[in-house]
Image (cartoon, rainbow, N blue to C red):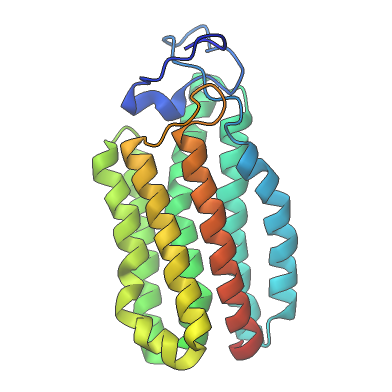
Amino acid sequence: MTAAAPDTTAPDANDDAAAPAGGSPHPDTPLHPLKPRLRGWLHAGMFPAVLIAGIVLTALADSTRGRIACGVYVLTACLLFGVSALYHRGNWGPRAAAVLRRLDHANIFLIIAGTYTPLTLLLLPDSTARVLLWAVWAAAAAGIAFRVFWVGAPRWLYTPCYIAMGWAAVFFLPDFLRTGGIAVLVLVVVGGLLYSAGGVVYGFKRPNPSPRWFGFHEVFHSFTLAAFVVHYVGISLVAYQHG
C-alpha cells in the first residue's frame, strides 16, 4: 500500500516485515505494504510506564523471593514492549528487521514465562512451583528456538502455541484461588482472556478498522496492553500480600 491508498490485503507471511510506519520499503527488498502510521506507538508509550511501574512493584515486594520473582516479570515485560516498539517504529534494513522480528516474536514466550514466575513462586507450594516453573521456562525456551529458527512459520501454527502455553495455568487456578483469593484469580483469568483475544485478532487479522492508521496489529497490541495491566494489578496484590 501507499500512504495515500492503503492496501488491506497484506501478505500473511510478510505483514510484520513490511516497511516501517509512514516510511518507505528498503530498496533491496520487494515492495511490501506500508504499516499503519500508529504501528508501534502503543508499545513505545507503554515501555517507560512498564519500567517505572516495574521498579515500584519490585521495590515494594514483601520479600527477597518476591523481589526476584517480580524482577524477572518486569524484565520480560520491558523486553516485550521495548523490542516491539524498536522493531515496529524503526526504519530497518532487511537484516536488522529479520533479527528484530525474531526477538519480537520470541519475547511473547518470555512474557508468558515471566508472568508465571511471581504467581508460581508466591502462590504455589515449593514442590509444585518447581515443577510448573521448569515446565513453563522449558516451553518458553522451545518456543523461542522455534520462532528464531523458523521465523516464517505460518500463523495458524505458532499462534496456538502462545495461547496453549498461556493457559497451562488453568490446572493451578484452584491453588491461585486458595492462596491468592478471588480478586487475584479473577485478574489472572481476565488477563489471560485478553491475551487470548489479542491472539485471535492477530491470527485472523480481524478486525482491521483502519489499515492506514490503526489496523488489526494495533488492535492486537491494544489487547496486550490491557492484559498486561490486568496481570500487573494481580501480581501486585500477590507481591504485596504474599511476597
